[in-house]
Length: 176
Image 1 (cartoon, rainbow, N blue to C red):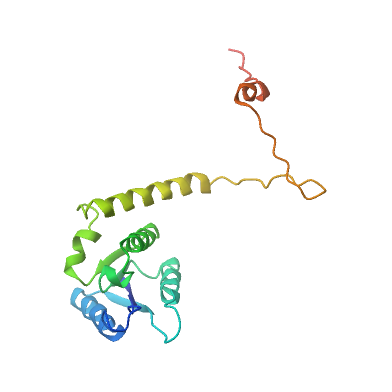
Image 2: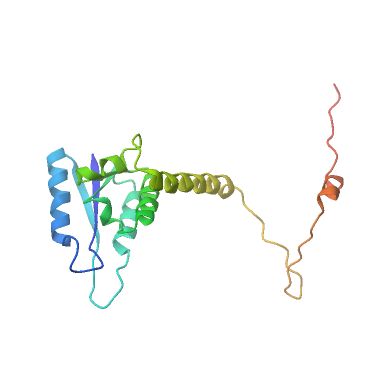
């Protein structure tokens, strides 16, 4: 299986594992499972700057190129220390068609779609699925921009529900 690794240094330099240690966990996991490591993307801490997500954006580019089947992380905490952000990122990766694999065995219940990861995570996942369904339904419709009047104002015409049916053209029934 072709995989990409993703790691993120903790925003607090005194907590978490170093980028080197996380990268070695990923390499060891890939070697142990006979997978092919295509790339390792990492978000590193730069003194005096906020921890960015350039490594994650690079990972998304690799996924978009269809170069990998899975993403290996050194634990879900590498995505974020926040449970909601973890679930958003897991949902994002899965919605892009890749499998997420953790080197931490304690994460298996979180990554197995058949297991129950707890009520909070289940609620977050349900909300994300509904957001995804909404985006797929609405995202396929092109919405025309509103008409702009010569003076730059936008005209919005509100139709009352009792009159909305009157303004609809009558259905024409074809002859039998």
